[in-house]
Length: 171
Image (cartoon, rainbow, N blue to C red; front, top):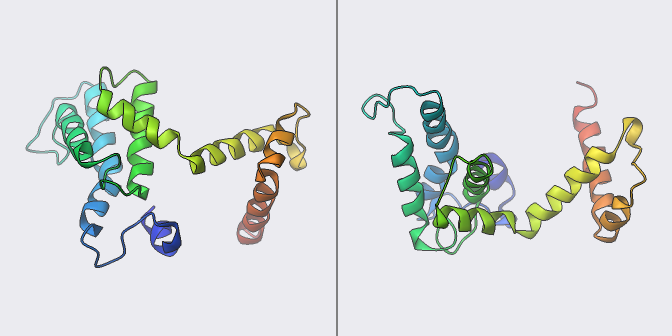
């Protein structure tokens, strides 16, 4: 995520190098892989909690730090949506979907804000279309392609697939 956010600065998903928010962004960008996932694994494998041996602390500490990180605005950096929100919002969404999070209104609201973003909705629509495509790119005749074509997503999916074939075709 960091590489993509830095390679496409016009998307505004990362504070530039040298910006005062860059350190906090990097911290939160890595929080899912470095803290949320190991804390969840520890909790659900019923491993003993060792806050001194493990940098993520405990599951309860992970939740508290995440909740307090969202106290400054709708996004983890306050008013600015970033690539860190993509990872953290997805984590909150999946923890809620799987019943791991219960009675966490701050984290539930955050997940809802992240999931409601138009770019995510477009990506989910592309996933639906990609799942409908069979071998050779055939699309099931169920009417979904018309909706996606009206949204301009069919051509976009074709462009993405063509780029992927150019880049990865020889592998």
